Image (tube, rainbow, N blue to C red; front, side, top):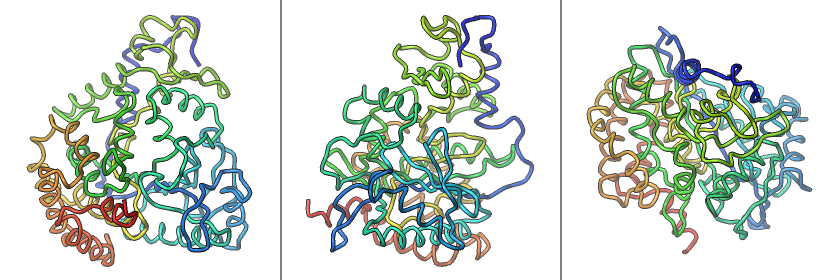
Length: 441
């Protein structure tokens, strides 16, 4: 928590050092790790006799999400263990293979896996886990829906389900951005893909490419159509606090990237003040962290090291550096399509020839990333430039898949990706188009 004594506050030099270390690490591994992890967010719904969604499940309702997961955790040999308390997300369920099930602000269920040695192993795990979840939710006449936005819920607003000081403060802060704040927190869902940075010889290439393909991922897998565009999830994020979203650092040498990153987070607005474990207040002044450090806050005083580390937890860039790469640009997808972005992006980041070919193609797009992301969310592959880039990028990935050992990606997933690209992406179609047609709107 902040201090009233200026001499005890964090120094600018220390803050810069922490920013770099927390994001990219002080020492990079000498081993070329190629692990993959996932975070999958889903909407729990009650369904009618025909299986159509009729009502969002509440976290502690009757039946509620916790009641259903508690039942699963009591089964013999369950992949889901007994519920435990958690400061940030109210509670969580450990998984037998490590990782957790947690909850977003509106009660969206989130599966967070550990890093797996291969996409094939990871996807086998998430299939088994989702099979277990599907079976237990079905007994309560409920389902878990995988799309980027809750398009079924008739209300404009969904109340906070995760009642923690952090979530309450975030809700209060983001509601200043009109409809987008509540929509983002309670009615959106994503796939986050997590990758190793790698050693000093390759981390910068992986980091740059993850950023460069982000708009293409958003466009290709747009799965949250509305009157606003094909990826309403992405549009919602892009309408929030500008200093905490977008693309933080993509140009220059290794030193340039690290300096740009530290300056970006230091000069971003403070959106949460953590005064104690049970008291977190939304930012109420147009104050950056540097301004807080230099001038203090009229009520809270000056920041210490823990305040800066907490500040670092409030960023929502398209690609977030967390000593690993977290790519956050993909709408949540129905189960049948979830493996496809995983193996395509894995190939581009980890297969050397594919990575270098893709960088050669996209490096000139660095100054255009923000504009490309806006167009990806609104028009997706209906945008001619994005459609062309998607064809070029994913064809590089298709060629690169064959250079991995056969069991690394998984033959079924490779075939599935090829079919998806041929049927949809290479004809400028997206999941949003299928949802639009199904809804008859």
